[in-house]
Amino acid sequence: MKKGFFLKKAAALLSACLLAVLSSCSSSAPSPEGEWTLSFIQSNTDGTVVAASPAYREAYPDAEEKEMTCLFDSESFTLADADGGKSGSGTYEPMDSGADASVYTLLFSDGENARAVSSYTETADGERQATLILSTDEYTLHFAR
Image (cartoon, rainbow, N blue to C red; front, side, top):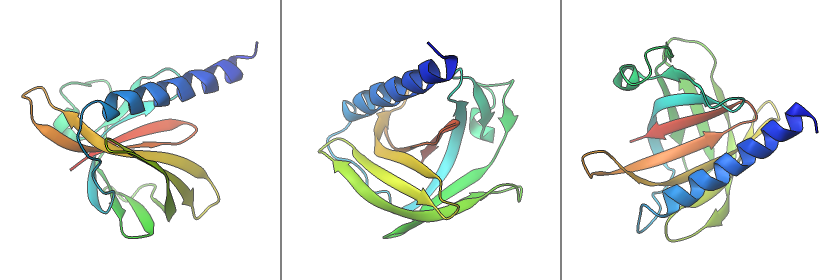
Protein backbone atom coordinates (compact mmCIF):
# COMPACT_ATOMS: atom_id res chain seq x y z
CA MET A 1 0.00 0.00 0.00
CA LYS A 2 1.38 3.43 -0.90
CA LYS A 3 2.43 5.80 1.88
CA GLY A 4 0.46 8.72 0.34
CA PHE A 5 -2.74 6.67 0.30
CA PHE A 6 -2.29 5.76 3.96
CA LEU A 7 -1.59 9.37 4.94
CA LYS A 8 -4.70 10.62 3.14
CA LYS A 9 -6.80 7.96 4.86
CA ALA A 10 -5.24 8.85 8.23
CA ALA A 11 -5.95 12.56 7.66
CA ALA A 12 -9.57 11.77 6.74
CA LEU A 13 -9.93 9.62 9.86
CA LEU A 14 -8.38 12.36 12.00
CA SER A 15 -10.84 14.90 10.58
CA ALA A 16 -13.78 12.58 11.26
CA CYS A 17 -12.61 11.99 14.84
CA LEU A 18 -12.08 15.71 15.36
CA LEU A 19 -15.61 16.39 14.11
CA ALA A 20 -16.96 13.79 16.53
CA VAL A 21 -15.06 15.34 19.44
CA LEU A 22 -16.17 18.84 18.52
CA SER A 23 -19.74 17.65 18.11
CA SER A 24 -19.81 16.24 21.63
CA CYS A 25 -18.71 19.55 23.18
CA SER A 26 -21.59 21.86 22.38
CA SER A 27 -25.30 22.39 22.27
CA SER A 28 -25.34 24.44 19.03
CA ALA A 29 -22.76 25.22 16.37
CA PRO A 30 -21.42 28.77 16.13
CA SER A 31 -21.87 30.63 12.86
CA PRO A 32 -18.66 30.88 10.86
CA GLU A 33 -19.38 34.55 10.15
CA GLY A 34 -16.97 36.95 11.82
CA GLU A 35 -13.26 37.04 12.56
CA TRP A 36 -11.35 34.01 13.81
CA THR A 37 -7.82 34.08 15.27
CA LEU A 38 -5.29 31.33 14.58
CA SER A 39 -4.41 29.05 17.50
CA PHE A 40 -2.08 26.61 15.74
CA ILE A 41 -1.39 24.73 12.49
CA GLN A 42 -0.78 20.98 12.25
CA SER A 43 0.87 19.04 9.45
CA ASN A 44 -1.47 16.43 7.97
CA THR A 45 1.59 14.28 7.25
CA ASP A 46 2.49 13.47 10.86
CA GLY A 47 0.29 15.68 13.09
CA THR A 48 3.20 17.88 14.16
CA VAL A 49 2.28 21.41 15.18
CA VAL A 50 4.29 23.46 12.68
CA ALA A 51 3.07 26.94 13.64
CA ALA A 52 1.40 28.48 16.68
CA SER A 53 0.07 31.85 17.70
CA PRO A 54 1.90 33.74 20.46
CA ALA A 55 -0.73 32.49 22.93
CA TYR A 56 0.15 28.84 22.09
CA ARG A 57 3.95 29.16 21.73
CA GLU A 58 4.59 27.90 25.26
CA ALA A 59 2.69 24.69 24.50
CA TYR A 60 4.49 24.24 21.14
CA PRO A 61 8.00 25.71 21.59
CA ASP A 62 9.40 24.06 18.43
CA ALA A 63 6.68 25.54 16.21
CA GLU A 64 7.13 28.69 14.14
CA GLU A 65 5.33 31.70 15.62
CA LYS A 66 2.50 32.83 13.36
CA GLU A 67 -0.32 35.32 13.62
CA MET A 68 -3.21 34.83 11.21
CA THR A 69 -6.89 35.64 11.00
CA CYS A 70 -9.74 34.12 9.04
CA LEU A 71 -12.68 36.38 8.25
CA PHE A 72 -15.98 34.91 7.09
CA ASP A 73 -18.86 36.99 5.75
CA SER A 74 -22.17 35.65 4.44
CA GLU A 75 -20.65 33.84 1.44
CA SER A 76 -16.88 34.37 1.30
CA PHE A 77 -13.79 34.06 3.48
CA THR A 78 -10.31 35.61 3.66
CA LEU A 79 -7.20 34.24 5.37
CA ALA A 80 -4.73 36.97 6.28
CA ASP A 81 -1.21 36.38 7.57
CA ALA A 82 -0.22 39.20 9.95
CA ASP A 83 3.41 39.18 8.79
CA GLY A 84 2.39 39.82 5.18
CA GLY A 85 3.09 36.25 4.11
CA LYS A 86 0.68 33.88 2.42
CA SER A 87 -2.99 34.64 2.43
CA GLY A 88 -5.99 33.30 0.57
CA SER A 89 -9.62 33.90 -0.11
CA GLY A 90 -12.61 32.30 -1.70
CA THR A 91 -16.20 31.28 -1.21
CA TYR A 92 -17.85 28.73 1.05
CA GLU A 93 -21.11 26.89 1.34
CA PRO A 94 -22.71 24.69 3.99
CA MET A 95 -22.15 20.99 3.49
CA ASP A 96 -23.73 19.51 6.62
CA SER A 97 -25.12 20.99 9.79
CA GLY A 98 -26.33 19.63 13.08
CA ALA A 99 -27.08 20.87 16.55
CA ASP A 100 -23.42 20.53 17.57
CA ALA A 101 -21.30 21.30 14.51
CA SER A 102 -21.50 22.68 11.00
CA VAL A 103 -19.33 21.54 8.09
CA TYR A 104 -18.51 23.77 5.13
CA THR A 105 -16.90 23.29 1.74
CA LEU A 106 -14.39 26.03 0.93
CA LEU A 107 -13.29 26.91 -2.60
CA PHE A 108 -10.16 29.06 -2.74
CA SER A 109 -9.83 31.56 -5.58
CA ASP A 110 -6.86 29.53 -6.91
CA GLY A 111 -9.12 26.47 -7.35
CA GLU A 112 -8.03 24.55 -4.24
CA ASN A 113 -10.70 23.01 -2.00
CA ALA A 114 -10.81 22.64 1.77
CA ARG A 115 -13.26 21.76 4.52
CA ALA A 116 -14.11 23.72 7.64
CA VAL A 117 -15.94 22.70 10.81
CA SER A 118 -17.35 25.16 13.33
CA SER A 119 -18.26 24.03 16.82
CA TYR A 120 -17.42 24.67 20.46
CA THR A 121 -14.63 23.14 22.48
CA GLU A 122 -14.17 23.21 26.21
CA THR A 123 -11.00 24.85 27.51
CA ALA A 124 -8.96 23.51 30.43
CA ASP A 125 -10.79 25.88 32.79
CA GLY A 126 -14.22 24.66 31.61
CA GLU A 127 -15.06 27.62 29.37
CA ARG A 128 -16.78 27.01 26.01
CA GLN A 129 -14.82 28.47 23.12
CA ALA A 130 -16.07 28.84 19.53
CA THR A 131 -13.70 26.83 17.34
CA LEU A 132 -13.13 26.68 13.58
CA ILE A 133 -11.05 23.86 12.09
CA LEU A 134 -9.97 24.40 8.48
CA SER A 135 -8.46 21.36 6.76
CA THR A 136 -6.51 21.46 3.49
CA ASP A 137 -4.57 18.64 1.83
CA GLU A 138 -1.36 19.56 3.68
CA TYR A 139 -2.40 21.31 6.89
CA THR A 140 -5.13 21.61 9.51
CA LEU A 141 -5.56 25.12 10.89
CA HIS A 142 -7.18 25.62 14.29
CA PHE A 143 -8.90 28.98 14.90
CA ALA A 144 -10.85 30.36 17.86
CA ARG A 145 -12.72 33.49 18.85
